[in-house]
Image 1 (cartoon, rainbow over the protein chains, first blue to last red):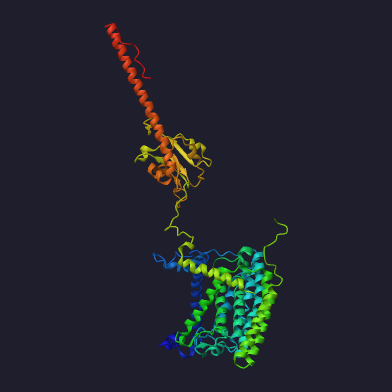
Image 2 (cartoon, helix red, strand yellow; image 1 turned 135 degrees about the horizontal axis):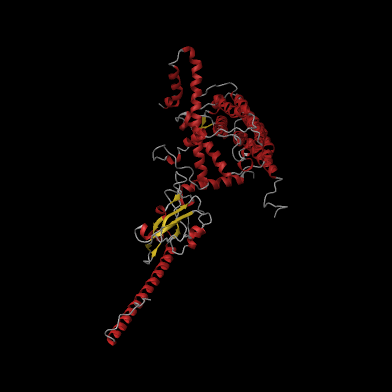
Length: 398
Length: 217
């Protein structure tokens, strides 16, 4: 019965496709999958925005939105209907294009933003047998497509003809390019161990249990530090606090989408969140076992519940971080990427190699753990060395 | 070590998050339409007119002296005097306002009208939920909308209302005392006049009556 529930979407797809003539099936099957992705993830996005607003509200000792429920009734649902008026507002707002803007590029930027983000969902395994396109080089495809987002960001910033937009876009490019390197290098360690770029293979490698505990990559020294690096880099890639310099409200209004309003702004917003979900989904696949259960006795829970549960949990951590940490300065951002994350990612690749070639006993845990911990402490000390922390001294003011 | 302080900060925010579900004291937000904070003692929004008794038309304290109209800095008060008179709380016949309009879209809540009013008639209201769909008609408050009973004033500003009631009572007492004195003087004068007349009649039974009747003052 639980197997039935696990495969409910796969079976539903087969049942739906059964109505279509044999010739059209290769065409219709992906179309149904695509429409499913287009339905589920924007809906998930709208729910997450409410959770984010309510969660940040609670962290700041406020209620957050708690008024809007079901329209035309008195039912409030604790404010979870808020996404509906928010979306309607976005749709009905005036679409303003600056007179000096490059109209075509300005129009294209949100679309160019959204398409690669949606493409990257095609390789993600949402559950057992639930991958739209299971490429042999799925991981490579994901990063290749994800790299196109930067073009959209710069298109938006450049075509707006606004110095805030341009500053935001330049910051975004600098940040995304810098953090893509530790992001990919931390994923490389997984590829080295698994020996495949196929995401379903990576999950299959994690999907077995010793003493009832899963072999997730995050439970190994190299996997743990790889996950931490991937997590930080994905925060930066999705422009979330503390890496929200590209859209720093207090400095450059809204960064590269300063000049966007109405539905184009909504598309940027959607693209940003969907990009965040995709990259978290990849992180789950690489390090947290994808759709597998952490303990063997929990394996009866449907795989897609595990995937979305892990996704939601990581998003909640993102929200928690957003409500906690202040924004980095540009030099701190660059120092962190190039002086801490990049060396640590390179050391992690070395550690992954050592882990692969040493015998599977306690010694490799000791060696790899010591290497990782030593590298972390030393690199951290190096990063903090020239920091003059303490009371700020004003030389001219006062 | 790197990251220590981040963990500490995360612990603080986590404590806030869960604490806000367990202790209501953490949440400082007031859920406005359902919950309300008590207003401060000297809250003021826009002026209103006080009337005594139950009838707004009869008990209105305003005598249309137009001082407030003249003093109003943004000139938001408009008064038309009546031609006839009606008795005020002292029983004295007074002019009353035929029209008394305050345009609260112009009013700046400076309270100068209240300070200059010699009749304790115009006071500041505390009502702040004044949003309307019509920005012209509904923001021009007429005499009917402005008139509020004295009991309402006592409710919103108890201390000020007591003070103004004392002033009115003192005025009233003074007027009554004056009237009483006048009545007594009249009685006395009447009695004197009568006595005089009687004496005169006694002295000269066929003397003519006095040419001028005695004055009452």
